[in-house]
Length: 191
Ligand SMILES: [Cu+2]
Image (cartoon, rainbow, N blue to C red; front, side, top):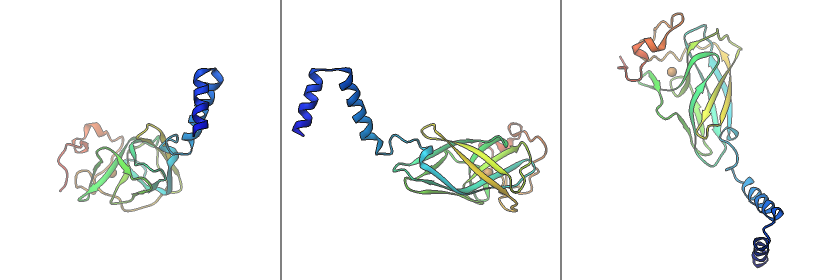
């Protein structure tokens, strides 16, 4: 350690550009071993991602997303070219609603997205999603990095949870979410 101090002193006495560059390089080398330099997106892995096939209206994507980092990661929002709006949902008493603050994935933990539980909600499906299709959804994370989840579509008869307690809700054509009061998070939900 004494030798290091003398080296530092020498560098301080002769603040050459080379010494500064060397110091910066050392600092970077010291950091690269930790997770602090990798983005949240680099720390996520997805398995068994799938989406419910749908011709129009609403559908959802599911799967497992693991956080390999040593810090919690939050999925803040989601977008997809397959739907006009994508939300992060939970199901409470068979009624689904956006999760305040997004999905949190604990350090070293796994987020389970499944019918009847947390899911990525697609509203206003833009083009029919057939079984076998790949559906891509881009997740924005807490550090603003983006993770693209590719979900394979399959036929599934469940996941009919509703916003308003009516499981037979007709998604209709060109559904306009903003005009439907039942879609408002503040609307009364449940049967
Ligand atoms: Cu939902």
